[in-house]
Length: 134
Image (cartoon, rainbow, N blue to C red):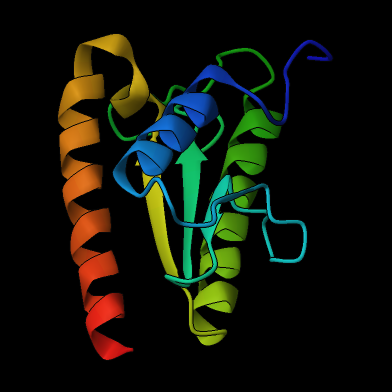
């Protein structure tokens, strides 16, 4: 468990690369400490917080599995994680931020191009709307 990193993971770095590639001149913050939940990527000018959700820790519907040993502990732990995720997203939305969640499996090599195209398109569309308002 001590070997599990809380930041700088491969999926986080892949997400940050996608965001910086889509919006090269925009300010991008990693792990914005000032925000609830410390979003993995935060774009202040777009008021957008993006989280990378690990398939195990955040109970991915496709890949999330509860370990068979110590079942009570893990079920409670994973339920608490999901509850915290919802609470943090609600808090950020109340502050006027958009909140996006990206699954870890969408940032793996076999789906990376698809995810990059999808996220880049959404980011550019959001940026264009923001520019047109100012």
